[in-house]
Length: 240
Image 1 (cartoon, one colour):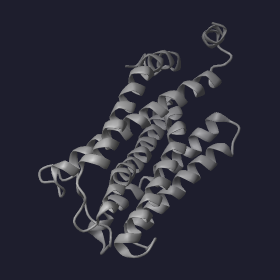
Image 2 (cartoon, helix red, strand yellow):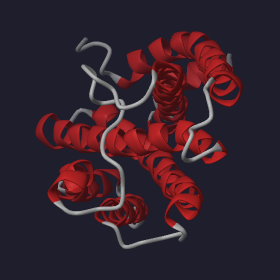
Image 3 (cartoon, one colour):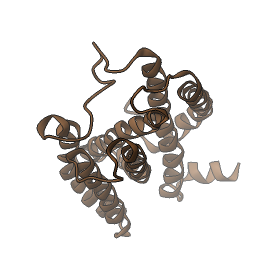
Image 4 (tube, helix red, strand yellow):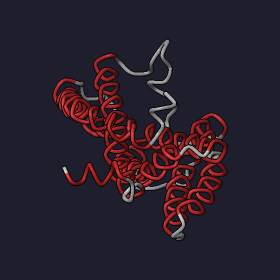
């Protein structure tokens, strides 16, 4: 495992993994979307609007997970100076921001027919919007410095401070009176939705997680080549 954490070994290992991961992501996305659109039933209250759930819920869960990963990777970099951890955090941030924006947008589409409005200053929605600003702040702080080490250190500190928003988002529907519904699929012993809706949702969730991993691997390989561009092994790779 320690050897895998070196930039060179991570580069070659990820290169072997990407083709298999790409096929798996495409297969799961296709299966999940087909099941969501054509197999999962229409909700008796929400009608066809419930189909938005198969995009909104995986994106919402992933938006929290990605920022948590950024926080963990930032801690690893600050404590152990693991370069690949910093790279993972850096590559994750733009994708996490996109997923968070998609979460908010799909939530607005879902909320309009359900609540009669595009937006309310609900605890869950507001804390999710703050998460988007945290992503933007992290990305902006990284791009503000030319020195990689300084940018990595300062952005890592910001990421760790921003972690306080994650439990607020997760528990907001329990801590405050909110329009947003509570957990559905995280109640593993007794999910709140029928199995014909649950299974496509789980497939989409797995597909989104794997897609995130794929994006990180591709982006990390590019970042490694740039950071190690003056090393012999990179010059050999680029010349072949």
